[in-house]
Image (cartoon, rainbow, N blue to C red; front, top):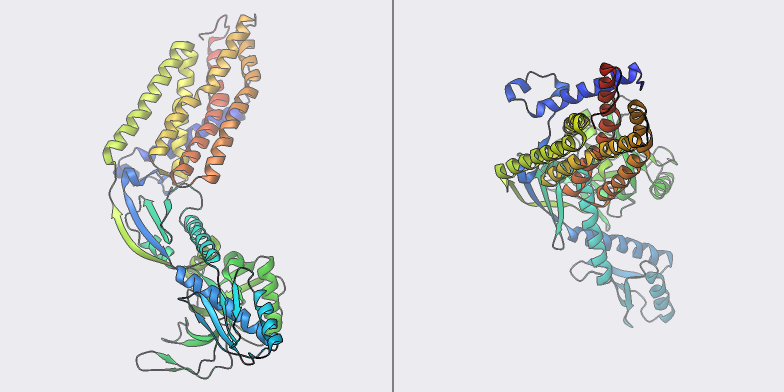
Length: 533
């Protein structure tokens, strides 16, 4: 007799019971659903084409990207000319032409002109540097580099938005590029996009810059406009200090460390027990942060988020490990929200919401009805096939198939996944694939019976010798699903998730649940001389 330990029997039955409990809320009426414990109040959401949702069109501010690139180049050009002791004047950015202009003080000095030309070319090898005999020079960014930069910025923005909205790949947002600077975002099941809009509206574009200590005092007019003697290369930004209504600070435009160097952010508490955000930089960012802190001990630096200074602490000592803490007048919720935004990734450019609308289901109730019908028909046809070919054992496989669907919806409910038409297709496909393992086992049992083995020995041999083939066949499908999840997006990833869950669950139902049912039948029959297979 095939032996199954009691702990394994208890585990299988417990899993079945939990699967029913977690899948049941999907079919309960609202009145009964509200009476369930909170842990069971999780259901599968319907996708945009089934339930409707929100549609957002975002515009990537590529002008700010070009401006930042030109300003960084200008700062490097200023530092280079000063280092080479080359006199210049009128160093300025011309954003419309995409270049930087300047004039040498001694244009008649040929050697100095050649020296300046050579030094400026080393700043950006893709930029074109020209200096006329009159000493008028320009640094022009190549159109190819601007196009490549813009393309990379849009692609990075799409990925950051995707991570913020759906880190697990179960909500199935649709994100796609439109034109040169637009991103379409469709959020299934989100009738009020206010929260998501707020999450996306904050670009979380963080930079570290030094405070300009040489700037004069800032006066605020009656209209709230700040006025100050701002040195070249600096600007006035609003200081988000909740203790005062309006506060401004002068900081340098040069970005010392960009948000791209940030690899992690977590909500924490500072030494005084106030909510704060801890930061961790990559190797490059840590090295820059160490240099910045070591060269500016006793000076203030500004942490700028979305063109607003959120903190302006003082470097008290060298920070060599690349770990910093943003402290200020945060609440716990604000610290958690800020750390989430920064952890998901800093957007390389601001995003502007230029279109927002709530859409109804494009296929509506017909799609839901057709999807249910397709799933039910697939189940009926597969169940009938198994009974016709394997008699009573086919019925046992159908019971396991029913639990396969129960477990699948329970898992999707626990993940709070969104079900779309591709997801329904994956479920229908899973129904056909779920019985593959049973077919392999049953055919192996038939073969062992033909070879002369007794029924119980044939069952034991069938399970033991078919398991390798079952694992191999399902593993190849899982590899394909993993590739779809890694390189796909939106509904494609949802299809991969549903398919992977169905395959993993089918292994459990075929190798454990069906086996338990057959063993229970054997024990009740006692002596078995033939098998209904």
